[in-house]
Length: 605
Image 1 (cartoon, helix red, strand yellow):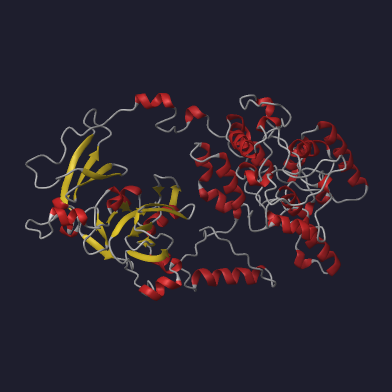
Image 2 (cartoon, one colour; image 1 turned 30 degrees about the vertical axis):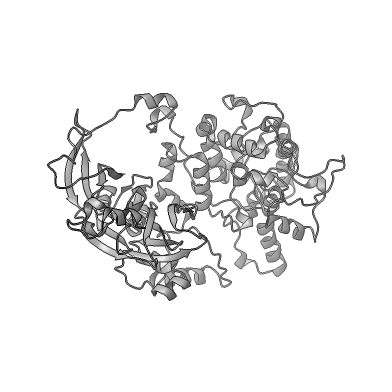
């Protein structure tokens, strides 16, 4: 789930490496996974994420976050917090036109070089360092960094835990109001003119409007001019709304200007202009202790010198790991060269074509395909339709055919369909009358069926994918097509109060479980990564793992382990891991988003 745990090894890197080798090779930690190499440059080179960004399959925001993670930045370490660039340079106008390049900051220069007059003063000071006897490796243009604990606290002071950090940093009180973050225009002006202020931004500027609002009503004081420090002062074009400001910030970040120039900023922060001669030529030199590997603390014999070096590294900013040493970062492809969604605008909707199979299942002479189509699944090269009598028909897609590209393939009954509550699926002579069926708490609908390739296969695809998108292209034998061929059809609404897992190829039953539900299971939902949630008459929702035994062991909570036993069977296709309470009436609908770790459920009124 992306959780991070920071471990300190006081005996040095050898102890760390031994621990890591033991953890990977000897210990049984089912959900632990890391790349074969922990070298940031190797991880970046093998990730393939740059090509995704170039083809505009991921956003600028997502790409910068990915670079931060690979370069060692983390939300859990305030000394190495993710860094984002200033994007806009206009914080005083009443309106802003994001198609006008003049409103953007020059991304080819570091913050300290944007003001030519200030840069001239800094260059004079840089030359003076040589006269004072500073070695070439220790000379710097900028004495403060663009990302440090103080900067993070400065920006996020209105949100915990940064409020508490700010108070602790100032010995139990807030800092002087004039030094707090209280106005965007003033902050930008300081970054442009001050000889000691070169800070960039943090990710929250593009996704967290609450950081600009003093919702906790902290007493931040008054400036010398008499201004009360409360909510952050926003540019006039934000119309007084922090949410509007963040929306425009994000829109600016994803603009065409930034897309065509972001690679310059990446060269400065993560790339070949980060250090050395290229950094000097780009006026991008910071204090030598801010760079990774600049000093070996273990070789500093004097305790005072060592403590001073450690304090500087921890408090005055650290430059990210260098991901590109010699080559410049490639540019993003133009919009014309990139993949485009089928619906690019409201106008293109009228150009969509409808592909209707010339012949379909369900004619009068057919034994199966009785009743309405209650569920449709679209796979990469086929469409699966489930009919009211619990028979399954597949339609194959032939993209190279000039006409009739969607054609009938197979029609078969679902395994043990007579256990479902679909009237057309029951055996003739059923003792259940239509009236009893109507009054029953058992029913079959579109929310009773889902399809999944399972968590294990999805994880394998993710780890080995060259292009980690909804249609993954794998360098191993597992591909999306082969994974979908072995997909599982999961259904509920059966008389025996279970969910049943069927093979989508043979339609035979692979598993039948109730997960501790008491009574009928009314609905289910499956996420793309193999999580399943079910809701039933017993007013509970239950979270399952589909075909991923290691994940089931890691996710299963104490209550489920006590009630159902630990999921030790490695062959179990579905394992119940959590029970969610809160409803007082039977669950009728639900949905699951595993990216947000959210289950939304609705119950009977």
